[in-house]
Length: 442
Image 1 (cartoon, rainbow, N blue to C red):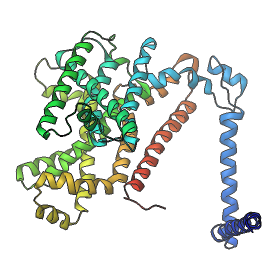
Image 2 (spheres, helix red, strand yellow):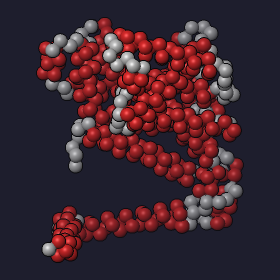
Image 3 (tube, rainbow, N blue to C red):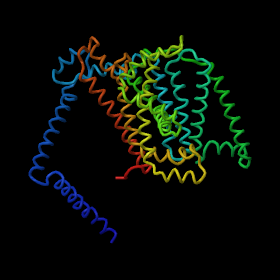
């Protein structure tokens, strides 16, 4: 009987599958004469588009050439990808010294390793991991990318970043192997499982101070060659500006949104005015103001380079837009949640941090990610004020003597690159929605 059933199952499944597919096609694409004609016209347009792009971008394209003239000699109608390939390093790294590119790659690897535990189920303390990335990684990566002399402040922050990274990696290893946090593991190894909480905290604090001291003396003995910010560019610069903007816009937006909803009149008016001023002008205006007017408000002798001014402008601009997104999420939470939190003795910050904000953020995921995607694309505006981000580098290809006039191919390549990054962010946000049950599962 078992053999007979195994033989009949494929025979029964196939017709059902074919019937369902045919029924779907008939219902959605060929339900009547007009829909049938429209379907064939649409398919023909899609065919012409795909075949034309494929012929231009691959069949007739030139991938190896020394200049644009050689591309024309090979094909007058195909794409000249040789210019894009020749400028690969500039597109991704700008004018960063070629013998120092390893620093950018190493910084990216550090970030990937630092954030990897956030996607591992058994690892504990994911919120602290995210906070440590935002608080300490920019200082370690900033010195790695810029180099030069380290002041006392940078030495302290680099040492803290090294300690945070080591703790994060140790916590990941312990979580994957023993299914417990690093704190629990250390307390158990030191035989202090039954000690009072205060004693355990003091032991962990002593270990952290010792680790900081070791990291501080170790990092004080090494350094890297200085690289001027004017040589930063390409996709690297775009990711630096957008990355800092994304990491800072959300906490900044939360603070401004809470300030706008505050019962304190002064705080509410200041927050509202700040938000409305930045939301009433385009980003390009804010960028020009940051690079021309910002130095006028600084004390005499206090100088910030243009890159820092642009990052500050991008952070403030997007924090104001994020504040409105956060405010909308907070308003969607029923008042009963606030009242329930107060009945169990929670104060304002306890209510917001433990009850209200986690619920609001789950509902705001699509809007938050949409703002992040917009921020990533808006960073291309910095090319107008003289920073050679990825768009600036793509436009520079057409001004290079061997590739003079090559416009379409670099811009198409840039569009594909942006699509890949933005689509990946969008898909991950959808994954978060499903994981946090903030959206439908179909």
